[in-house]
Image (tube, rainbow, N blue to C red; front, side, top):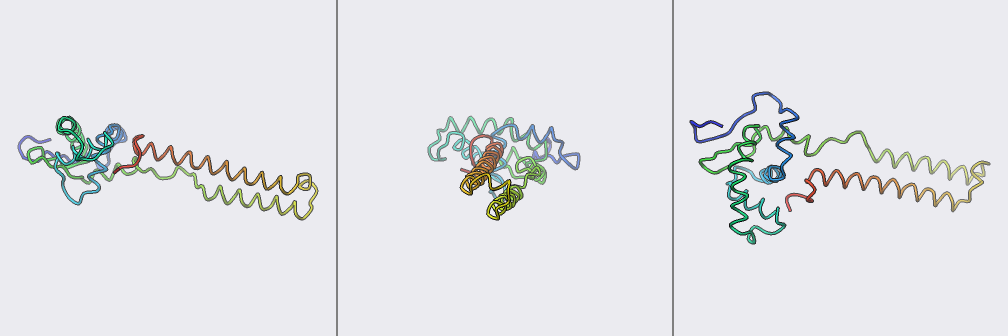
Length: 191
């Protein structure tokens, strides 16, 4: 943050943001909400506008229904703490004197942390593998091959349906956990 010019924006000295810096920025819900909101804007937003939107989201209401006290509380924390920290990290361009903030180029570096690439789990492959194994087992049963004739066809149908239901439940549970983690436990943003 420079005291000489009106703009208090900072670009990161290193070419890439450290993991610790990224986590420090993303650890606070207001900073995550600010980033999410700024991504929806085509240019700079006023701190007042940002404070209103964040206050409304935190209280699960509309901008029209937040009190001036609620707005001021968010505004003060953004002005004094969150926006300077984000500017120091090169994530936003923050002009304290004009009261505006916009995304900086460094914000793109946080994308990997906000929407991480899949960690190798390709669920379509699991479903395909289960379908192929199930098809082979049921086909062997229908052809009358000995070990597979010990269980009736309806038994295999129940096993196949149960396996798909279990795989679907695991997939849904893991996807829901990732979704909540990305949204800071508060659902989707913007509301």
